[in-house]
Length: 308
Image (cartoon, rainbow, N blue to C red; front, side, top):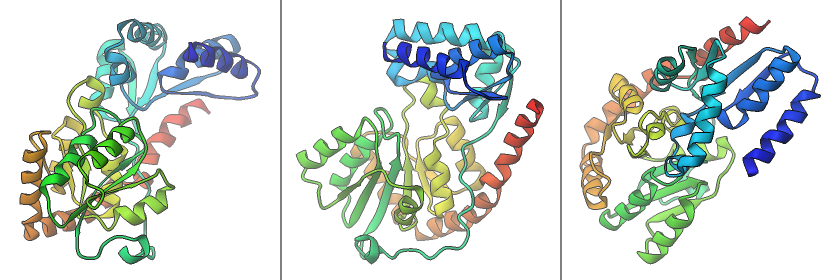
């Protein structure tokens, strides 16, 4: 009902708004944008940031999922082109609807030269290894809970959990239940530059999405690129899009299990290989040169130029 009301209100807002182009961001705004574009003969772009109908919030709610799939099928079968975030998801849309799909990855701009805050400035210990998992989508089935439990088996290591999401209440309970207050530091969602001050001090950044649904299977999380631009190696689950980037640039390693004790063994093994870590850090400079918004925005600008 929330989304029904939202779409109705959005429809009337767009119907009487002055504009030359409508941009629908994700499936939950697609229908009113499409109807208004047809009524007013205004061009419309669709920018899908995920494979919405296969998100974990929908896969177990079959009726709601069918509603969104019906909307997606109704609109995309009548459109010529769209944007999405990676090649795997683009291929799914092309196969389903025969539509042109342009890939624009959500990559941050180059950080450039900046004065860093020290560990002391940020209240971080000087003598511990730092691990980080971050983002505004620290949600269920993304491995953050297991990473917290890993800390039971690691010594002289501090985990930073930075951001928000529906897994955060569970994470706080796990920290309290297992008395991990000295090993896990939970920080709230903050502006990008402040967050990156913490991230740049980490030894490893983690992206641990589980292969429990198509949306996660083909995900390409923002945090992966944040870690790259922070200059820290990445430890990840070997999902297709993430693995392709890590393998191409040789900037990190993988876990083969979400079982906390096994994960701890893998992390410990990586921490004990300083030469490998140094190689990963050197390779990160090449990844940063290729994977930045300065390059990616050219694709986006080219796409939008067709609406002039």
